[in-house]
Image (cartoon, rainbow, N blue to C red):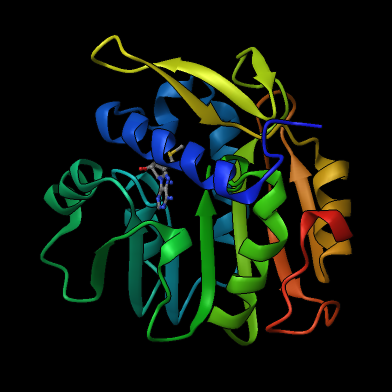
Length: 231
Ligand SMILES: C[S@@+](CC[C@H](N)C(=O)[O-])C[C@H]1O[C@@H](n2cnc3c(N)ncnc32)[C@H](O)[C@@H]1O
C-alpha cells in the first residue's frame, strides 16, 4: 500500500509539488537527452495537433511554442504563476494563446478541445487519481479528439522513489520537497490506460521517454470516472 492511501492525502502532496515547481525551473532540454527528445518531437510532428488544443501543466512553455505553431487556439494551464510568467515572456502576445493559472485538479475549462497535450505531466498525477483525471479529460475532449503525452520512463530520472510514488527533490532555494513521480514502463502504462477505457498506442525511446496518443475507447462511460480501486 503506497502513501496515497487516501485521496485527501494525495491532494495535500500535490500542494507540495506545486510549490517545488514554482520555485525550481527545469525544462526538458536540461535532461541531457536531446537526441531522444528529437525522436519524440518527430512523432508529434506526424500527429493531429490542429484546432483547439489544451495543454496541461505547460510550465515555462517548452511544448507550448511547438503546439502554438500548429493549433488554431491553445489554452495552456499551469499551477505555477512564476512558470506562467516565463511562458508569457516567451510567447505572450499571441492572441491565439490563453495562459491559465490554475490547479488542474480544481479547474474545469469552459470549452472542449480537439486535442489535449500532457508534457511530463502524467507521472505527476498520483496513480490513485489517474482514473479520475483521465475521466475528466474525456469530458473535455470533442468527439474524435486525441490526448497526446510524453513522459519519463521508469527510472529515467535516476531518482530514488521513496515509496507511494514520491521522490525527494531539492528546490532552487535548497529546500527539500516530496514530489509525485509515478514510475511507468510503456507496457504497464498502456495496459492501465486500456483498462480505464481508452485506446492507446505508446512508444518509447531507448533510455528516457515514453510517448504516444490516446483516444476514448468507449470503455468507462463519461461522467463515471474509474477509481484506482477498479483498475
Ligand atoms: C515536469 S513540469 C512539466 C512542464 C512542461 N510541460 C514541460 O514539459 O516543460 C510539471 C509542471 O506541472 C505543473 N504543475 C504541478 N502541479 C500542478 C497542478 N496541480 N496543476 C497544474 N499544473 C501543475 C508545474 O508547475 C510544472 O510546470
